[in-house]
Amino acid sequence: MSRRRRAAAAIVRFLRSEGGGPATEFALVAAPFFGLMLAMLQVGLIYFAQQSLETAVEESARLVLTGQVQNANMTQSQFATAVCNNSPGLFTCANFMIDLQPAASFANANVSMPTLTFDANGNVTNTWQYNPGTPGDIMVMRVMYQWPVFLAPGLNLASLSNGALLLMSTAVFRNEP
Image (cartoon, rainbow, N blue to C red):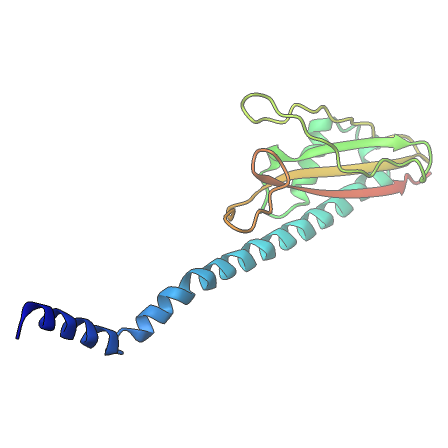
């Protein structure tokens, strides 16, 4: 048998063989499957973190609403520590951005997502207000956190230029008299 015929016979045997079918099918399906699993994990973590932030803000806003912050003369850093103590271990406390200020009315309360500005090192340069108000004041409390996004290919969940997702929770309330 000539070389050509042996080569053609080998090619025909290779094309007819079915031994590698499952491995080939797994190779075709594995990448999308693992990508989908990672995407579901990332989205689930984001929803859990957002709900945890909502709970921490609700509990911290109650400190302002009931006058505990004002009576204790809490500083901005002391209030940030209180917010941190109300949050689960998911967050790095130093990365909370807390904006607490009175509003003229409920209709004029600023609950919009702020535009963050960054320095050359990627640190947020915004300054946040801290004014716990007086009895009867309408208060707006916004707490923001840059959530790291670990899954980028094909599913870009980042909302910030540094590749993180900005989580934000807002509470609008009237201080008790």
